[in-house]
Image 1 (spheres, rainbow, N blue to C red):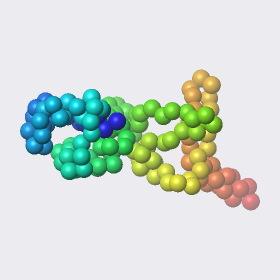
Image 2 (cartoon, rainbow, N blue to C red):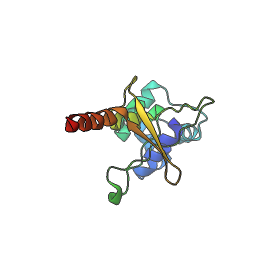
Image 3 (cartoon, helix red, strand yellow):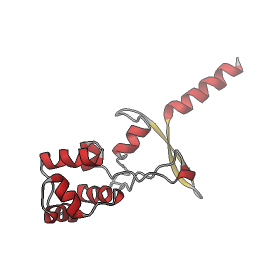
Length: 138
């Protein structure tokens, strides 16, 4: 994943592997190996990459870098793929958890529409609606 992120961020900034390598003080072959997943940057190099690309170390190494949405889709996000485990579990990507303030222990309602797909909605949303309905009935 870090290799894909390095390549994406490098291309986004219109840098060649050679230009990035020069900026970091490593060889072009080193950058090529990182991008190909043949090796990974050490902590010092990862810190330099993080600073060069203006992203956190966590985002650089653990989650797909979010591609900014087109202007017509403000507030819309593509967080990448998740894999469904044997028991139906998924891991919500770090960036999605940050954007939507999802913390361990939070409850999400799973909604489904056979034509449009699945949706995850914060359970507190439904509790607020229930309270409004209950208070409105009194």
